[in-house]
Length: 170
Image (cartoon, rainbow, N blue to C red):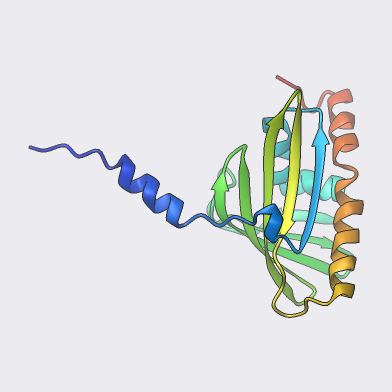
């Protein structure tokens, strides 16, 4: 009988299949520092109903059949009026980052959300690739504006849930 440690093979496979949008390659990006730990912020970014709340969407729901916790392969549908956003998680590293394939208004792109702990805060970064369908500056400014406006409410939304006792900081 032989026993082989397959961890190095698994780690190499995972590294080769990572999908990550780096800040320097982002077509649109938003970065902010929030005074809460990554695990708390992670919950708000990965639960469609919580994300829909601070982004002021009409609703957010899972569309996949994986069940249980959100993971690679999980899908989402969010809507704000006639605007529908469809997302599927391609790469998932809990409490650090996740990358999704997203489509909205006929555009498709990759979106990485990254959480980086810094002194008593977490830097939240959202980075989008250039959509192949329409990469005009007008479209970029529209998406940037929507992202800036939506994510500006994240910190206060978390504060409200903390004040109501819905969530706690460990």
